[in-house]
Image (cartoon, rainbow, N blue to C red; front, side):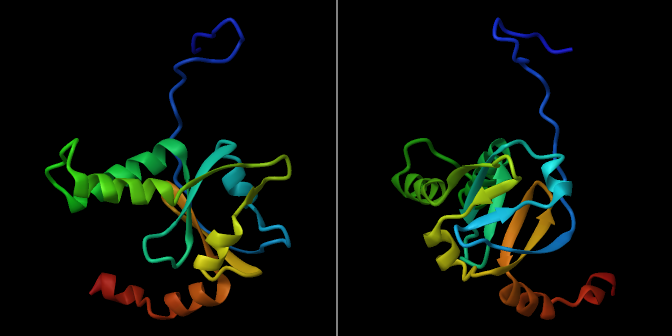
Length: 158
């Protein structure tokens, strides 16, 4: 068992890795809240980070450490030789981090997506929430279906 501080909260408990799978048809309510699938609520913490994907197609949602790993992975892919005080690298890092919002899962299992984030990704009412490894994605249902129409899984097996 993990050591506890005086306040009774566990310290240094190993973080459980999440691996999210599945596709769920849901709705955004009038206030911009999205109810998470029960399957996801069971494995995720109440503190998540959301951001627009790089092409403004959907919203990515991560556990905070997974978001930071994603940012570092993107930066490392673009700049294999990361330099602490490179102005260009700083600009891109800042841009990725500034698009993110910390959100809390409420007692009803919902997260809030800001109006500007929903608008940028074309998210209106009908959505599809998709598990994608360490993150899940929130898509406008029509946009998701159009994107998936272009996916031919048989090409992976030829």
